[in-house]
Image 1: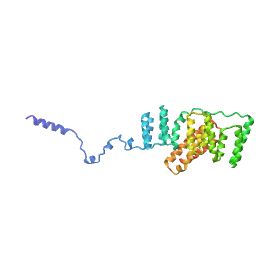
Image 2: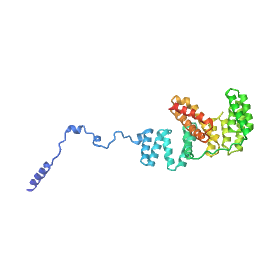
Image 3: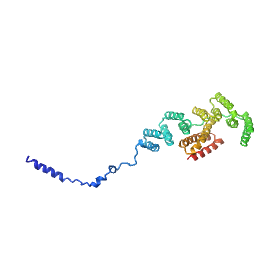
Image 4: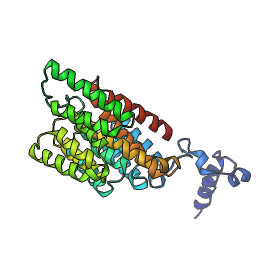
Length: 325
């Protein structure tokens, strides 16, 4: 015991000799542990609380870091907030195609379009992967009839006469000129004008006629176009679906592709009043119709630069899209 007391005194002296800081109570009262973390980001938002725009930005960062799996997860999370977010859908499709997943993304957007066939953006995103895949392929065209120099001259004269009479309001005279021109060559351009000039009571007969022609020549995309063009007078959605099937099958025909662009423009114009009123879904749907119209009409212009119809319709498409911006 006599050694215990000196030992305790030595221990106390050693503890007292250490230089310990004296803390000010005011400092502790204002202490914020976050301020002691230089890496702490006050703006951080967990993914579960992000909106669609923020998730798209997060996915884009993942893509830049070559983390495509994470980007795919983030795009799907964005779809849960906003299924038809334009940028999310475009970038997600590009991501999938870049990774060789065409079949997966094609089936996914086919299901989405079939669930909402009235949406222009659903139709556009459904066809977009195939359009990208076929971008470098030449348009398959049908062979036009060979006309003698005299026949070509007569045909051109009657065609011009038919259009002039139509513009002047002389539908009967235009129909007669069209009939004479078709007797020389049954080109889709003149058949299209024939359909435009036909009174409503003739539509059923024309539909039966062109449906029979398309059935007799199932490899003709242009024959399918004429059936769809008259069908569109009563059911534009069914007409577009008919042309879509022919295009998916790769049927040849410039008019087949022109018809898709033409009908998409018409369907976009139908939704334009609602879109201009500011209804968000109508805006996106109309933009989708116009995007599809522009893609197909641009391809038609490249295949036949001398055709006047494509330039006229493309000007309308550009104007309508500008109105929605």
